[in-house]
Image (cartoon, rainbow, N blue to C red):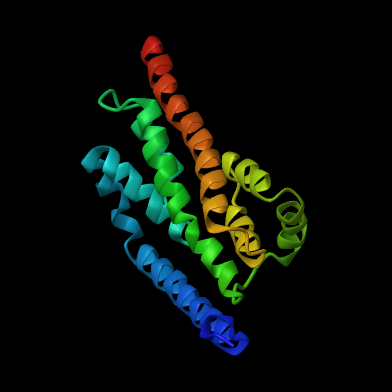
Length: 190
Protein backbone atom coordinates (compact mmCIF):
# COMPACT_ATOMS: atom_id res chain seq x y z
CA UNK A 1 0.00 0.00 0.00
CA UNK A 2 1.43 3.36 -0.97
CA UNK A 3 1.80 6.07 1.72
CA UNK A 4 -0.73 8.32 -0.02
CA UNK A 5 -3.38 5.59 0.24
CA UNK A 6 -2.74 4.88 3.92
CA UNK A 7 -6.02 5.70 5.72
CA UNK A 8 -4.29 6.28 9.06
CA UNK A 9 -1.90 8.86 7.54
CA UNK A 10 -4.80 10.56 5.77
CA UNK A 11 -6.73 10.72 9.05
CA UNK A 12 -3.75 12.23 10.88
CA UNK A 13 -3.27 14.79 8.09
CA UNK A 14 -6.96 15.75 8.23
CA UNK A 15 -6.80 16.11 12.01
CA UNK A 16 -3.71 18.32 11.76
CA UNK A 17 -5.37 20.49 9.09
CA UNK A 18 -8.46 20.86 11.27
CA UNK A 19 -6.45 21.88 14.31
CA UNK A 20 -4.43 24.39 12.27
CA UNK A 21 -7.65 25.82 10.78
CA UNK A 22 -9.15 26.23 14.25
CA UNK A 23 -6.02 27.94 15.59
CA UNK A 24 -5.96 30.32 12.60
CA UNK A 25 -9.63 31.25 13.10
CA UNK A 26 -9.15 31.92 16.82
CA UNK A 27 -5.97 33.95 16.22
CA UNK A 28 -7.58 36.07 13.49
CA UNK A 29 -10.67 36.72 15.59
CA UNK A 30 -8.65 37.75 18.64
CA UNK A 31 -6.39 40.02 16.59
CA UNK A 32 -9.23 41.76 14.73
CA UNK A 33 -11.18 42.25 17.93
CA UNK A 34 -8.10 43.81 19.56
CA UNK A 35 -7.66 46.42 16.79
CA UNK A 36 -11.33 47.12 16.07
CA UNK A 37 -11.07 50.78 17.14
CA UNK A 38 -8.44 51.55 14.49
CA UNK A 39 -10.02 49.85 11.45
CA UNK A 40 -11.42 53.08 9.93
CA UNK A 41 -7.86 54.40 9.55
CA UNK A 42 -7.32 51.92 6.71
CA UNK A 43 -9.79 53.89 4.55
CA UNK A 44 -7.09 56.54 4.13
CA UNK A 45 -5.25 53.99 1.97
CA UNK A 46 -7.90 54.01 -0.77
CA UNK A 47 -9.16 50.82 -2.36
CA UNK A 48 -6.52 48.63 -0.70
CA UNK A 49 -7.63 50.11 2.64
CA UNK A 50 -11.26 49.26 1.87
CA UNK A 51 -10.16 45.74 0.94
CA UNK A 52 -8.34 45.38 4.29
CA UNK A 53 -11.26 46.79 6.29
CA UNK A 54 -13.65 44.26 4.81
CA UNK A 55 -11.17 41.41 5.06
CA UNK A 56 -10.77 42.09 8.76
CA UNK A 57 -14.45 42.83 9.40
CA UNK A 58 -15.45 39.51 7.85
CA UNK A 59 -12.58 37.52 9.35
CA UNK A 60 -14.10 37.76 12.79
CA UNK A 61 -16.39 34.92 13.73
CA UNK A 62 -19.40 36.07 15.75
CA UNK A 63 -17.74 39.30 16.94
CA UNK A 64 -19.01 42.55 15.42
CA UNK A 65 -16.56 44.66 13.43
CA UNK A 66 -17.21 47.73 11.28
CA UNK A 67 -17.59 47.00 7.63
CA UNK A 68 -20.62 47.92 5.59
CA UNK A 69 -20.80 51.33 7.26
CA UNK A 70 -17.34 52.06 5.89
CA UNK A 71 -18.39 50.83 2.43
CA UNK A 72 -21.46 53.09 2.58
CA UNK A 73 -19.30 56.05 3.56
CA UNK A 74 -16.58 55.32 0.99
CA UNK A 75 -19.21 54.99 -1.74
CA UNK A 76 -20.16 58.59 -1.03
CA UNK A 77 -16.60 59.92 -1.24
CA UNK A 78 -16.10 61.59 -4.61
CA UNK A 79 -12.54 60.25 -4.92
CA UNK A 80 -13.89 56.68 -4.99
CA UNK A 81 -16.07 55.07 -7.65
CA UNK A 82 -18.83 53.00 -6.00
CA UNK A 83 -18.26 50.00 -8.28
CA UNK A 84 -14.54 49.89 -7.43
CA UNK A 85 -15.42 50.26 -3.74
CA UNK A 86 -17.75 47.27 -4.15
CA UNK A 87 -15.06 45.19 -5.89
CA UNK A 88 -12.44 45.97 -3.23
CA UNK A 89 -14.88 45.42 -0.36
CA UNK A 90 -16.42 42.29 -1.87
CA UNK A 91 -13.05 40.70 -2.53
CA UNK A 92 -11.81 41.49 0.98
CA UNK A 93 -15.10 40.32 2.46
CA UNK A 94 -15.04 36.99 0.62
CA UNK A 95 -11.47 36.27 1.71
CA UNK A 96 -12.35 37.29 5.27
CA UNK A 97 -15.27 34.85 5.29
CA UNK A 98 -12.78 32.02 5.02
CA UNK A 99 -12.53 32.15 8.82
CA UNK A 100 -16.06 30.79 9.20
CA UNK A 101 -15.46 28.22 6.48
CA UNK A 102 -12.22 27.10 8.17
CA UNK A 103 -13.97 26.92 11.55
CA UNK A 104 -16.52 24.57 9.99
CA UNK A 105 -13.89 22.61 8.12
CA UNK A 106 -11.97 22.11 11.35
CA UNK A 107 -14.99 20.36 12.79
CA UNK A 108 -14.50 22.32 15.99
CA UNK A 109 -16.95 25.13 15.27
CA UNK A 110 -19.15 26.16 18.13
CA UNK A 111 -22.45 27.41 16.81
CA UNK A 112 -23.96 29.76 19.37
CA UNK A 113 -27.27 29.90 17.55
CA UNK A 114 -27.95 26.22 16.94
CA UNK A 115 -31.51 27.05 15.89
CA UNK A 116 -30.20 29.27 13.07
CA UNK A 117 -27.63 26.64 12.07
CA UNK A 118 -30.39 24.02 11.88
CA UNK A 119 -32.27 26.30 9.46
CA UNK A 120 -29.27 27.28 7.32
CA UNK A 121 -27.51 23.91 7.11
CA UNK A 122 -30.20 22.20 5.00
CA UNK A 123 -30.00 25.06 2.49
CA UNK A 124 -26.23 24.65 2.24
CA UNK A 125 -26.60 20.88 1.89
CA UNK A 126 -29.30 21.17 -0.79
CA UNK A 127 -28.24 24.21 -2.82
CA UNK A 128 -24.51 24.42 -2.07
CA UNK A 129 -22.83 27.43 -3.63
CA UNK A 130 -26.11 29.07 -4.62
CA UNK A 131 -27.16 29.21 -0.97
CA UNK A 132 -23.78 30.75 -0.12
CA UNK A 133 -24.26 33.36 -2.86
CA UNK A 134 -27.74 34.36 -1.68
CA UNK A 135 -26.79 34.43 1.99
CA UNK A 136 -23.66 36.49 1.31
CA UNK A 137 -25.55 38.91 -0.95
CA UNK A 138 -28.10 39.92 1.65
CA UNK A 139 -27.19 41.82 4.80
CA UNK A 140 -27.62 39.35 7.64
CA UNK A 141 -25.75 38.59 10.82
CA UNK A 142 -25.84 34.84 10.20
CA UNK A 143 -23.45 34.44 7.28
CA UNK A 144 -20.72 33.14 9.60
CA UNK A 145 -23.03 30.22 10.31
CA UNK A 146 -23.45 29.63 6.56
CA UNK A 147 -19.66 29.62 6.19
CA UNK A 148 -19.36 27.15 9.04
CA UNK A 149 -22.04 24.95 7.47
CA UNK A 150 -20.21 25.07 4.10
CA UNK A 151 -16.95 24.11 5.80
CA UNK A 152 -18.58 21.28 7.73
CA UNK A 153 -20.18 20.04 4.50
CA UNK A 154 -16.67 20.02 2.97
CA UNK A 155 -17.81 22.26 0.10
CA UNK A 156 -14.79 22.73 -2.18
CA UNK A 157 -12.87 25.85 -1.15
CA UNK A 158 -12.90 27.33 -4.67
CA UNK A 159 -16.68 26.95 -4.85
CA UNK A 160 -17.22 28.60 -1.47
CA UNK A 161 -14.92 31.49 -2.38
CA UNK A 162 -16.41 32.05 -5.83
CA UNK A 163 -20.05 32.10 -4.71
CA UNK A 164 -19.23 34.11 -1.59
CA UNK A 165 -17.25 36.63 -3.68
CA UNK A 166 -20.12 37.18 -6.13
CA UNK A 167 -22.58 37.58 -3.25
CA UNK A 168 -20.29 39.96 -1.38
CA UNK A 169 -19.82 42.15 -4.46
CA UNK A 170 -23.59 42.37 -4.94
CA UNK A 171 -24.08 43.38 -1.30
CA UNK A 172 -21.19 45.83 -1.26
CA UNK A 173 -22.36 47.41 -4.52
CA UNK A 174 -25.73 48.07 -2.92
CA UNK A 175 -24.09 49.78 0.06
CA UNK A 176 -21.53 51.71 -2.01
CA UNK A 177 -24.13 53.01 -4.47
CA UNK A 178 -26.52 53.80 -1.62
CA UNK A 179 -23.73 55.85 -0.05
CA UNK A 180 -22.99 57.63 -3.32
CA UNK A 181 -26.60 58.46 -4.09
CA UNK A 182 -27.57 59.38 -0.55
CA UNK A 183 -24.82 62.00 -0.49
CA UNK A 184 -26.03 63.39 -3.85
CA UNK A 185 -29.62 63.32 -2.63
CA UNK A 186 -28.78 65.05 0.65
CA UNK A 187 -26.79 67.76 -1.17
CA UNK A 188 -29.88 68.69 -3.18
CA UNK A 189 -31.67 69.66 0.02
CA UNK A 190 -28.82 71.54 1.64
